[in-house]
Amino acid sequence: MKIQDVTLTLFSWDDIPATSYGAHTGRFAGESKLGLLAITTDQGITGHAFLGSAFFPADMDGGSLIRYLKPILIGQNPLDRERLYKAMWKRVRTTTARSIGAVDVALWDIAGKVANLPIHQLLGSYRDRVPAYISSAVLASPQAYADEAQHYKALNLSAYKIHPPQVWREDIKVCEAVRKAVGDDYILMLDSVWSYDYPQALRVGHVIEDLDFYWYEDPLADADIYNYFELKKHLSIPIMATEYPAGGLDSYAPWIKERATDFLRGDVAVKGGITTLMKTAHLAEAFHLNYEVHHGGNSLNNFANLHVIMALQNTELFEVLLPSESQKYGLLQDLEIDGQGMIHAPTGPGLGAQIDFELIKRKTLGVLS
Image 1 (cartoon, rainbow, N blue to C red):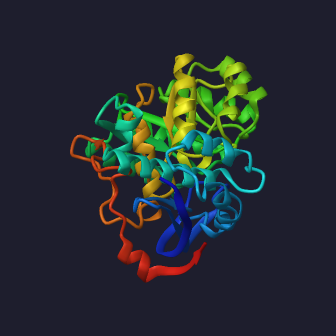
Image 2: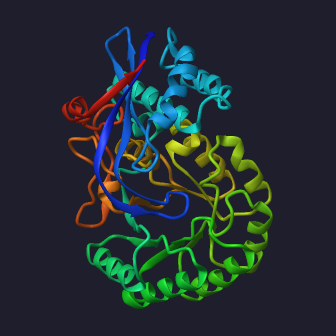
């Protein structure tokens, strides 16, 4: 089998509601662009992935994918994923982890279709369902967070994670309001999105420690290993870092070596695909660390993340980021949470997702090839 062509169809994502997750996204709304990556083979099998998100349009990465990664792929066997993965990372200075991730997901999609199996079975399935947790946007008031948390607790969601206003005194008020609303027995997490300096992070950490939060995510600057190590020494609440900076397997090594985090973190978009996630999760397992998978930014990435989760024992939860209209687009049937708060493994070959090709055709803005 040989790869014949690699194309990226850019299509519009309309009616995105006004949303913010923090300073890294700002407040976005309206329209973005997704890219449908298609890797076609001489045996009639095509692998797909989506590139882009509601706040990071696909044309930011798409040009470098076609210019620098496509030449590596043409004429190659798509099942040689490890060799192609190594070759793509050698070009990371001219492209992006997001582009590498999209190609890697599409190659895994081909492999599943060749085997007529879902990707998680190729990886080696560990489970067929996983508990989902709700991950908030930045909301207007402590009461808004409290109301949202109560709503999803009533729907049997396993946990609620707060993306706060990112002003430390206000963030404490939000955390206190949510804990009061949901009671002492419900799992809560805080994702501060790299917004504190060390003294602020320590103050907030002591408060949510007393409120029995389950983890404390990204309180400090994304590469501040020195102060993460110091923070971890002074808090008993588990620290979660490593979601950023974007990078591959080797980006995790100093965090483990310095014992600067309790949980590792990543997703197929920012870490370079399914291959990176599996390597990292198994590395984490060797150190008895959880590898919690971040949301993927688009619908097909979330399918890819879910396949990884189904093949891991050291992941507990699946992240559902709100609002749905800023995360879900381009599929005929997206992932859904059942009445017990679980998300089930895809069963179709490859990614097992039904892409809405008619919508993409109607919304096409151009094709990069």
